[in-house]
Length: 322
Image 1 (cartoon, helix red, strand yellow):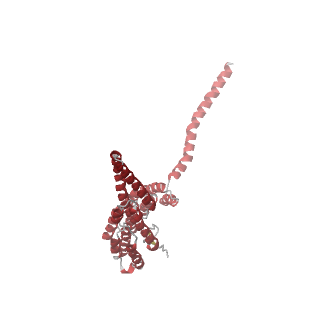
Image 2 (cartoon, rainbow, N blue to C red; image 1 turned 30 degrees about the horizontal axis):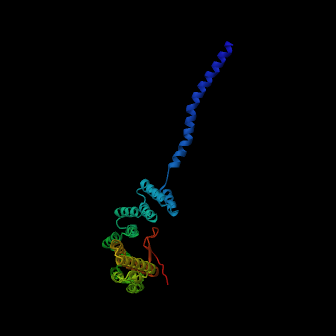
Image 3 (cartoon, helix red, strand yellow; image 1 turned 90 degrees about the horizontal axis):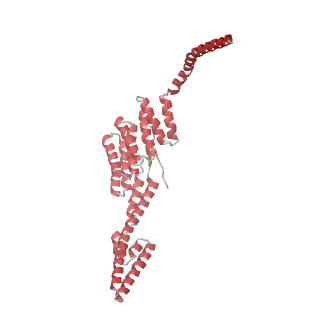
């Protein structure tokens, strides 16, 4: 029994020594096998990273695209595609509806690349982003700044054209005509200014309502609404005001002065509202008619200008309705 026990202890001791000798060896072998794989998995090339960002941009996953373009710029700050990546970041924000971020991104590109094709396109995209936010003043300032610094007649003409359309958006017809007239003679056909001018002159025939006349006609309750072609409102105003006037008259006629006074006070409020509503309706009618005219003008004459990052120049996309 004693001999067997000693033999068992001896075998256990040998196994213990072999086990601990094998642990470092196995770790060394495992490390030598996995370390090259790990290193190869984290190596990225400029083309692969840029194409990865382009993939998300093409899939319209714009916020992910922004992150990947920024990663590209961080790891490869001296790569020749950095400017393109910066432009794509601005476009990603713009197409994703983040217009303030788009303006910031395009301005960053302009600050870094002063006089390049993409910096010029960035000026145009900044104005587009401002227009999307109905910030027409900053859009005009941005384009006028571009006109001041550029020596390229093609760029100036496009800036004049864009400014003209911004003024059309705000129904500033004379200002629009003034900027369209600044376009050089050689580009007048390019922007189809003859037809645009002809269609723009039709603004004088826009059917409008006179707010002052609408208010004056409202002396007769509902007549102002009727003038503004709001027939249901005209009927309601006439019946409501007429009913309250009659009720006040009957109250005073029955010597119920307290009730008559209350009804007359209430009627005064409705009567004043009838006048104010008619004036407001005239303004709304005019805005609606002007909006329709502008949309028709866009559909029939406007040249859609797209800033295509793959092309050196400004890409013109012509869409005409005949």
